[in-house]
Length: 345
Image (cartoon, rainbow, N blue to C red; front, side, top):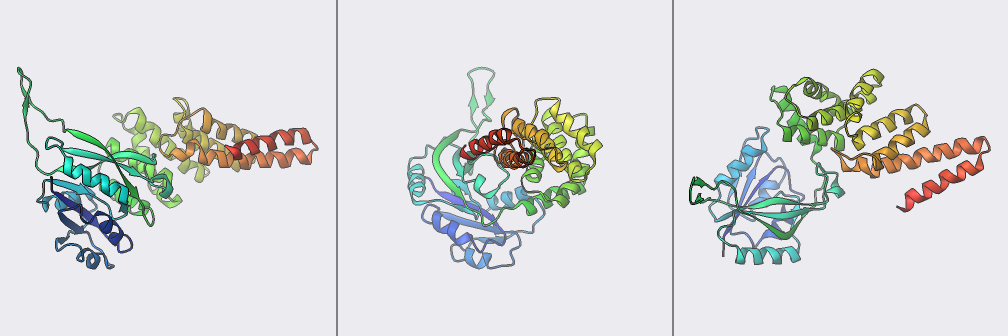
């Protein structure tokens, strides 16, 4: 049977840390907890479970903290957990079976990460695979009978284990602060980081955080080596910023950069909001409808269903009021039926 080191990085997790550790106790052969600057009772709680509690000065870099935690591990495999995760009894049993039956050639085990949409996280899936268990030391092997080379592809096993993500709150403010510091230092965001920054803004960004991101995404539009995915992400963020600023010229400049390609739900929704703000409920409803049916979300899945549906109901209600005022009761009835249909979906 394999042995496992639990490696965690934490900060001010006193409300959830014990819940996480209680759900993992008995499965782990070693518990390593790296604290990045807690000011609450996080470290006191951690020391009830392990004597391997380390301090790590926070440098706005999660990878640095993760690498430090991995450096302290001594078992066969490393399991990575965040403090707001919980493994229920059914999945504890599945984890124990995995531990007993693990084949030595497996280098990474993926597990389902669940309950994402309930907490407004940056991820657009309620349940998705994530790598969670890693072989600590990797054996490199030569492959192929001729033109031999070292096999660099890890052997990955997709398990059925489900980890429940149960945060007390989302981490948008913290994460957006890290992105802002990266940009302030002149660091060029990778394609992955560009996507995550745009996602975080469109899911949980405040008006002020949006506006602080303006220059970053304007730079994207002028970079010649950004691909179309990044251009569309920047266009969506900028169209939102300029709608909030009520800068109509800049709003249409950037929202159209998305629309002229395959339209995103976010851009259609922004156009719906633009016309709603001007009292044009019919035009607004057309764009909300497009967000749900004629486009696809690229940053926040809620722009493809939940948000435009709610806005569409509101638009139809306004149209019903207008039609009733002019005595068009048949027209009003059609929109009332449409509202009922939307509410029943």
